[in-house]
Figure (cartoon, rainbow, N blue to C red):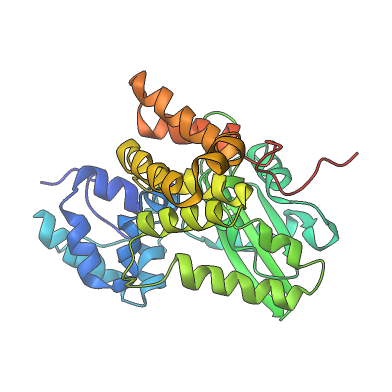
Length: 330
């Protein structure tokens, strides 16, 4: 008989499923092209840790019972057990299912009107979220859909519901369903923060650029894999002299699986194309190159990739003067 804790259900987190049954990744991907994103290490470390099969099925537009049955069959589990869709009595504590209790309390969540913030609101909201108790929540109001927040808060135990009031008004309710250890890392290297500048000019343009970013970096069935995409963006950033962008793209490339050897070869190519003088005076003195050196040093010390990525996000985030695009304000 299958242990209740290991039985695949609608409330099973995607990350837990794949950790226990790595072979099920292919089964999941075969159900919908949307699940191709699970190959992205960044998403595997963030969204997959909090997303349930019920959430995944809803995003993919397929019946959750069918998805659960397919996965159980592939894992050799019984098919006659209920999948517990939206059944709060059977939901594991901390499961990110939107229960009736959650829905009835969302109007009591602390409100953060990000439309009034001209600077980067991500770190401030992340700190506020980290201090929120399990069962509590935040109500964020923004003039465009704050897509970067979904991953940032999802990584520290939040689910969300988005309500579009108009083209320039979005209300996002975040509910904390589990606690996480330690403080939230600076999310900025992995997020398109430059788009936040656009809302000062025109919220509509900001919202459209979020869609363009999603189209480029989260395209379904993309021919260019995520790591290669970030490597290309890194090279373009350096070639254009945009070292702040390049530093962010390097962090994303490494988080997506780029190896030190690949980075070595890329920088060798840049020396050839940009010239030794430009490399020595401009590139080697940048935050981008400092991040590259940090990676090489930590790998030489035998540090794991996950630990290195955490350090990179902290050291080369918005607080770094050579990376941040939002100056400190009094």
